[in-house]
Length: 370
Image 1 (cartoon, rainbow, N blue to C red):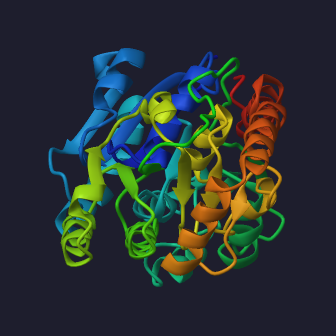
Image 2: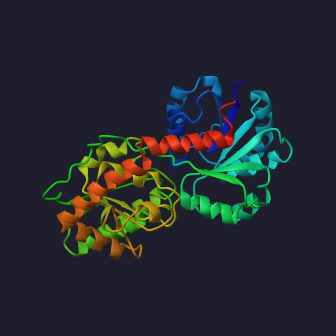
Image 3: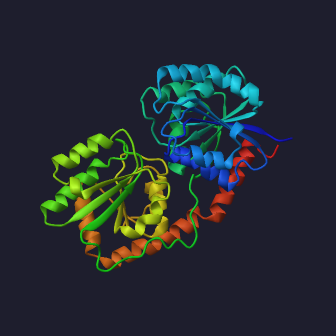
């Protein structure tokens, strides 16, 4: 019997959690199931077209054609969600991100025949209230899917009443083979070209990159940064670039799902996040071999090895970041080592075999074989 599955997410925006759904579909997690995707709102709509390429039109439902989440939308979703489960005859529901987990877990107490699985993407929630509420509602959750080992450890300890709940690490990233997008150049670009990809938010901490570019400028070192992504901090970052007198050195490239194919235009990739789960964009950069500089947070602590496959910052501030950039620019041998080891580590830890193992564990936990 074909298992009917609902994947419930906040929006169709182009964030890591949302793009991760495309990876799960392409990798075969839902093979042999009847999959329906339900989103509370359209968000920025970046993955809508890609989802429609993978699902028939009647398998994708968006409740509100609005870019921003509101209380009224959450109330509407709270009412519509159980109706959707009944209409689709779903027996499994996967809840991605905090708002959908609140709604899905609440109804899990009332419709226990639908097995609920929570997909956790971060070591901390965006609002302090979410954690205690989600823990209070956590008993109906049958199992946890986590984007990384660090996420798994954090959420199991803090936000689930049942400490024996099943969990599987299911990274939302699969390393490509034969990725030749990046070739180390000698000499490096003039000015130095930096790249960073991800939502423009406080979590991603892009203002530190702007401070580093300004610091380099004060030392007579020319550098530019291209920010791939959109988000609520965009206007703040533009204003900050103007105040630092580096507007001509900061490029806002917008959302580009294929940004990593353009790394050949850059010298270094920078990820100064304040907190992370897996951090897919950093993995995407590492698999190309571009030398990476990152903050030691979330799963980055696990797969990031200082001076071996990336440069890990000790103190995440503009001054230290500018010094790290100068160190890499002056040490070609170190850049070669970081590049070679990063590509090798990505293939070993996130390649075909690793993905197959995670998929099998996830399908077994959720009993998707029918």
